[in-house]
Image (tube, rainbow, N blue to C red; front, side, top):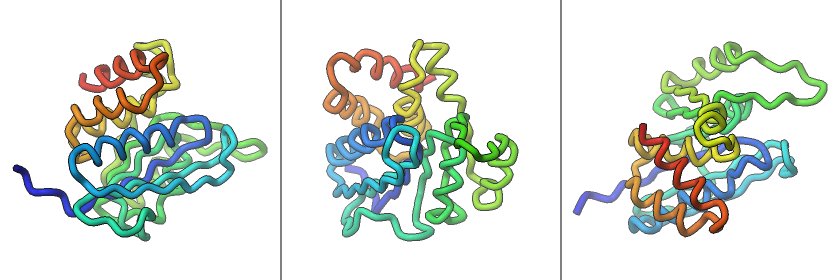
Length: 193
C-alpha cells in the first residue's frame, strides 16, 4: 500500500454561482474515500452570485484545522483570473496555480488585462497554468457552467492533486444531482485529453 500523504492544501477561488462548494464537496468525498482525514472551510466574501468566494480543503494523515495558514497552499484552483490574485496570501514558492482564463468585470472598476494579471501572478509563483476551461466546456459540451469540474478533473489527471482519478469520478457520481450527472461525467472524461 502506498505511503499516505502528510497533507495537501487547496484554495479554490472564484465568484458566487461558479460552483465552488460543489468542487469542495467532490474533493472532500474523493479524499475521504482514499482514507485521508479531511477538513474544509467555506469563506464567503459577497456570497451572492458574482461576489468573491474562497473555499479551503485540507487532506492528509492528520489535519487539525480547516483553514490553510498563510503561505501553505499547495494549489490555488481559480475559476476566475482576478480571484487568483486574491489568494496570494496563501502562496509559497512551490504553490501551483491552475487558473480559468476568464475575467468577470467588476462594476465601476477598471478591468485588468490577462497580461497584467499574469505579470502579477508571476511575481509570486513560477508554477502557473492558465486554461481556457470556460471556452473549452462551451465549445465541446455546450455548457460553460462545468468549467470548474473540468479544471478539477484536469488537475487530478495531471497529478497536480494527489488523488486517484477514479476517486474523483466516484465522488462526482455521489455529489452531483442526477439531472446534471451525465454532463459532469462527460466533463470529467473531456479533461483526460
